[in-house]
Amino acid sequence: MGITTAVTTCFQKYVDFQGRARRSEFWWWILFVIIVEIVARILDGFVDPPAPGVMFQYGFIYGIAVLALLLPNITVAVRRLHDIGRSGWWLLLCFIPIIGWLVLLFWYVSKGTDGNNRFGPDPKKAM
Image 1 (tube, helix red, strand yellow):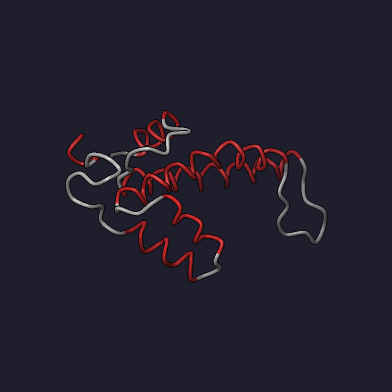
Image 2 (image 1 turned 135 degrees about the vertical axis):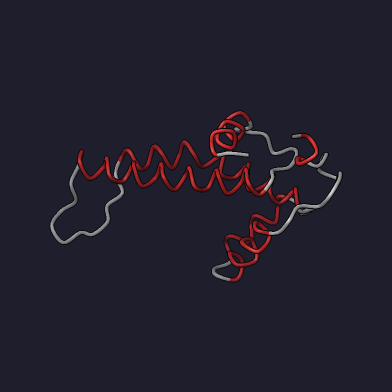
């Protein structure tokens, strides 16, 4: 799966917490989000330059971008957890600093379960 397919899929499944997401879909989506946020911060710097001595300033464009991508971020993360056989509620680990993030990162890079699991058919077989 390429970046355009992954981004298209994530926007089509904007509020779809059902099913599974492959590693490629998840990581291409994350790359897209990072690029959009960098571009938004650069545009904010042109529209409303930060005050002298301020290194980072979150502006209006960045805020809109983050809000627009928040729900697809959550849904693709939940579907990625489904791919390894975990409930989406495990996403709440992100509220545990460092340890929770490391556990989630490990799960995000883990290979999905082969074949069907309780969350749906294998997305590799569907391709």
